[in-house]
Length: 393
Image (tube, rainbow, N blue to C red; front, side, top):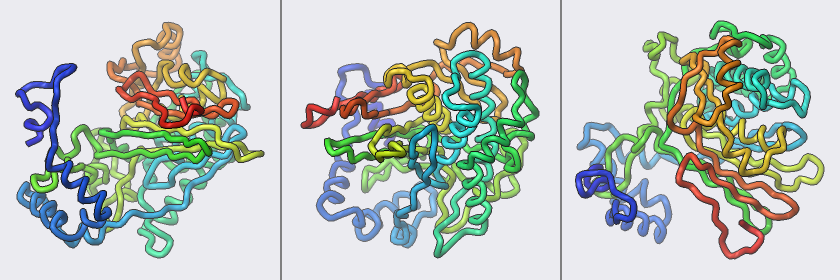
């Protein structure tokens, strides 16, 4: 069914060809629009969806769907480089982005991250933050916390703490790297789950109300299963959980905070942020991205480019990126990376690896002189647009 939908002629569609007609999905979306989202979790749509999954070998039941409810979480707030940054708490990775930014800020704001030494500092901050990320998971709710909730809360408090950021910076070697197990301070490394198949929207209206929204089906095409009765392409988010007793590819123990539990959500790289002025509360930046764990580093690099290095919104988004998630121990770089960076970073001890695809894809809106300026990443097919307001561009 997946091939029939996305490759109707038995091959990938060419530019200008009509493709991917999904009448069953259209009908499902129409039913949701008319009757509300609960029709997907109760009634005929739910029964059909559960039946389709079971026929494909899955164990989803109508009872599972009836119990599925979104959570209204308290946002995570932090002061970063003179701005109030609002992002999502675990099981999202907003705190990890903040941690990278706080480590750079701890070196004295503004500090350039453009030269080889600055890039080295940035990469080491990435590695520290990804090490601590391995202790994160879904804490549950205040009324119904999971076993590791208190530990996760402590990790998050450290990740947004200036004191913890300073301790990580103090342990960083200016001209060298450390063994992987020494990163993350007291929150050492366990396991890094991967994810992609993600999209992001950054939205600002004429009144400066803002939305930073990331959505995902995890890996490319998710589970690769299309529900026959609803037309929905199903995700494979269960793959984001750690598995007890089973080391990952690199022989590392899985993270207990991210074990599967009933009602639990897996750790995600999604890290949408909204930044506003500390003094006037005025909207400054709406930013988010897609690209699995590269979301985290792409958002941090884009934010630093615009805020710390004073690049234009477009240049901050388009300049070449680096990515390091601690495991595997490769520093990924893009095609346009300067020769200086490629030549000098190996001298610091980094193991460089070229990345043919883009390192994350961001969508950003910034407010400049009362005007909303929207920019989209050239690494993906997204594009900025405006609707019925001359102030949005």
